[in-house]
Length: 278
Ligand code: SF4
Ligand code: SF4
Image 1 (cartoon, rainbow, N blue to C red):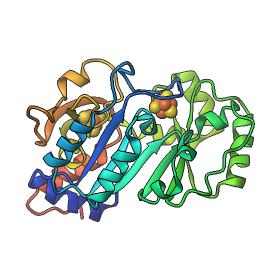
Image 2 (image 1 turned 30 degrees about the horizontal axis):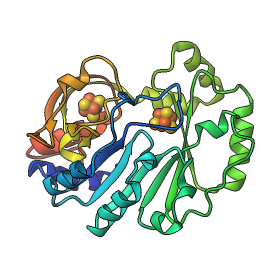
Image 3 (image 1 turned 135 degrees about the vertical axis):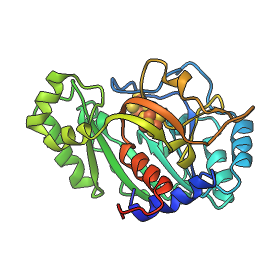
């Protein structure tokens, strides 16, 4: 996140008024990626009542990201998009891209951005290269390299994909990759490994719940998607939309965090009366 945006958000954090939300409207997915962190697939998607209650709880919200499982599988997906859009809230979404054609093009005009996972295409499971050029909203692609990424052919498939789709592809390494896989991609895609190495252990104050809280389909509020095992869900739960929650920063100790830099910068900004780091 650019520094000016981050500091602008930090001022909202001081007032404990998040300006963005992640709404995990759906646990389910029509794919089964081996690196998927989504838990509780058996549970229901977010109810319309909960979505409305969340919007009421955050009346000053400026943007919402739909995510978690595959959001387009929600039985009221179009209704949710229309509701959020009608409130003048910016919309973004993380999706695996398989269902986009099932909805009218006009619905996609209501999105400011889409992040489309393309791992399954690159893994050789589909003969045809998908074409997303028809999408009327800004979009980019994400490819996750993992232990079973087909050796050698993934680069060819990616080149094929990029001949059809001109938007950028972010290449990431499975965050849970073991040493053998890491070693392999140090040779095949060092930048993906370098990116993973930036996810470091974090011990300090986490401001992500104040900046962009994550609402799970059951109404529980967390500082992030907590793509981890263990007792993170119990320890760092901020409360529930239906009862009580807090957006106050919390002290955490996380194995691997992608928001370390943001957390440290915001902490310094809020606590140093004469910040030299700018
Ligand atoms: S597409 Fe996303 S949500 Fe679905 S299984 Fe893969 S990683 Fe999980
Ligand atoms: S992983 Fe990062 S964002 Fe999530 S709770 Fe831990 S410190 Fe906060």
